[in-house]
Structure formats: C-alpha cells, structure tokens
Image (cartoon, rainbow, N blue to C red):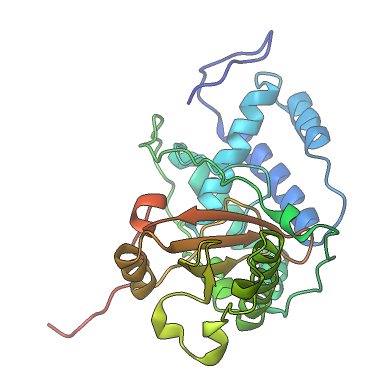
Length: 293
C-alpha cells in the first residue's frame, strides 16, 4: 500500500544503509521504553529521525517502523504496539534488524523476562464489556519490491519469544479467567442469567483436548466455543494455534470464537474472530512432525 509523501520530501528513492541503521536504532530505543513500561512519545522519535534523515517524511519513517514490526514478529520477537506489521520490506532491513538483535543482549534479557514472568494484576475496568474492540486489519503479505544483497554473517536465528509467551501457563490462565468474567457479564446484562451460571472453564478441568478453553452460550441457548489467546503485547502480535484447535474450529465453525486478549497487565483489550481459523487468520506452519527416512 503506497502512502503520500510529505511536502518537500523525496519519495521513491531506495533507503540507504545509513538511513535504515538510524531508523532501526530509533525503533529499538522505543521498544525498550515500551517493554519497561516507561513513557513513549512516538511522534517525538519520528521528528528526531526526520532531522537525521532529511530525505524522509514523517509517513515514510512510520511506514519503515511498521516494516520493522513485521521483521521482528517473523523472527519471534514482540513489536511496538501501534506499529502495524507491514511485511513488504527490503532485505536490507531484515539484515540490519538481525544485526541489532545479535548485539542487543540487554533487550533480549528484557523480552525473555517479559514473556516468562507471571502476569501483573491488570487494573479492572469500570465497565468490563468496554474491553471489547474491533479486530485489527492486517496487510496482505507481498514480495519485497526492493531486493538487496545480504551481507555474510548477519543472519539471525529466530528466538521464538512469542511462542515462549504462548506457553506461559499463568498468563494463559489469567486471560481465561478474565474472559470467564466477561462472558458472565455479557449474558447477565442480556438477561440470560440462567445461561451465565452454566458457563464452563473446560481448560481448567484438564480438557484441553476439546480444542477450546471455555464453553459459553449465545443468548438463545446455542453453545459458544471460546478459545482464548492472551498476550502482553499489541493487537497485531501473532499467536499460536494447535492443529487440534484449527480442526475443531473447522468442524464447529458456526459456534467457534477466538478471543484475543492483548495489552494484558496494562490495559486489557479484547477482539473476537468468529468461525474457522482457516478463514479468519493467515495460518503458517511453525513446526513439523519428523520421522527418520
């Protein structure tokens, strides 16, 4: 998707290594602030970059920051909330991001601690149903329009920190408990109080094989099968689904709902995806069952 350039700026020129280095360094400083829960002014960081990169507009810099989010997610790292991952990036950008990750040991330590620690107690909203927001709209993945040679020795092995977070049982359980409260409130307000009292937290009973976490209901009594995915990070953070969850979402597409909790521990927000995960998400294989040939 193209964006208009700001007045007086050069549009369409390939980014130099120096420009990419400066932009990636700025992004990593912002990511560090966000992970620490410190004040982050994205607009000010953008203005400072414009001074360093006179050829680049505000929108061009923001576009590049969104490209960096895509690279980080593909490498298994969280990205800055609000910078929607845009995957049509130049190979030079992946190279520079990888080089920064190879030397950013303090940032890796911060991320590792973030994805493994028990969740902080999130402030309870006055109106529990107010955490519901529309699903985000992702960009379609495209081939890069600018391909540059990758220098040797700069490849980076993905760390899968996002997968590590998905295995954080205390975080997952806390998210499921919040959804239990949300569902009870939803049905209670709708006048279906008898149904609200029948909601089951099946995952807490060791019934993970069912392919969903919570058995809830529509107001007319139909079952609502809910799989909960929780992250501390933003709405665009990728999540992991098992083959069983995908298959169950296919078989029970009319009743299946994916509840994505994000910004957990800060200001929890929730969006829903209804139906088969094959139709609501872009699925990519992340592991394989291997047998000796």
